[in-house]
Length: 135
Image (cartoon, rainbow, N blue to C red):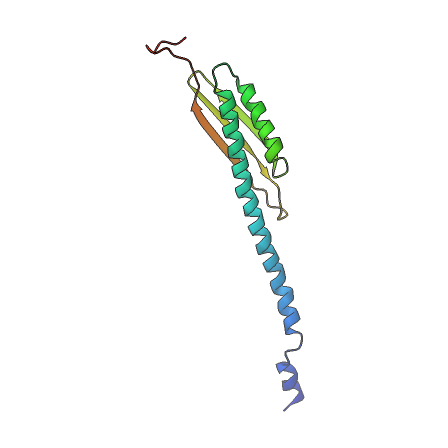
């Protein structure tokens, strides 16, 4: 067989080349899976904090500040590292209370900035008498 032809058919080094091409793609795929799992977890943390804020802010003599404080306490316990730069907004009227919690998810993949948020809303509590009058 011709030495030039034999040299072209030689497979030496092809495994190294394949490894160099495939491993970075697999690592990026694994990092993306981890990143989106963190986004899913951060959404649950934000939703839980919003529900806790709603529960604290909607009672009869509470204020929106009570809801914000409760959300911040919940975030400090659960999501201080996962949900970076959290924002908490609580709106309380005589009829409706709404709590919104959001933030940036910690980045595993460099350059990928994803956000997570949670919202909870419900009627503001008011005491009424059996005849329907407010007390």
